[in-house]
Image 1 (cartoon, one colour):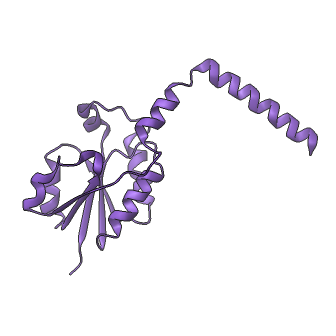
Image 2: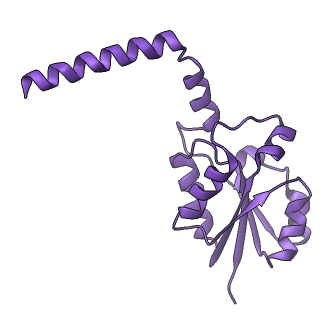
Image 3: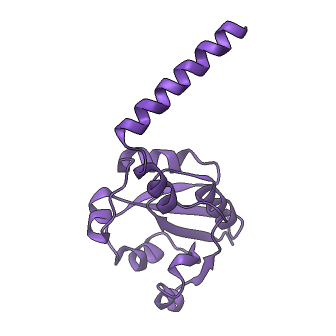
Length: 153
């Protein structure tokens, strides 16, 4: 009998850690459903994604491990989705460890380890250090390097 796996996340600034989790989740079953948090739900969670919801869900839909991507609009949806999509396995990153154990009455719940050295929070922290002045200086440096490359070619 086919096994359905579901996960939830914002998937902002999609990176290798996101891809690794989706790949590992797909290995746990035959069908992978990914619920992508809407901008409105992220606001409730106190998050402000950089990439708009419609683009984030489109990126997730394009991943070969993902069979279906749906919007996540509230906390209660997880329990409803388990029934609606006949889910067997609920998996999510270990940063949520213990938070969804209440679903164990319906599905197998497991928490995946993070990919070392990468996180959306860290990417946002690094990006926030780039103010306009630094970006302009970087552009100037890249223009100079480009000119040098052209002259050496």
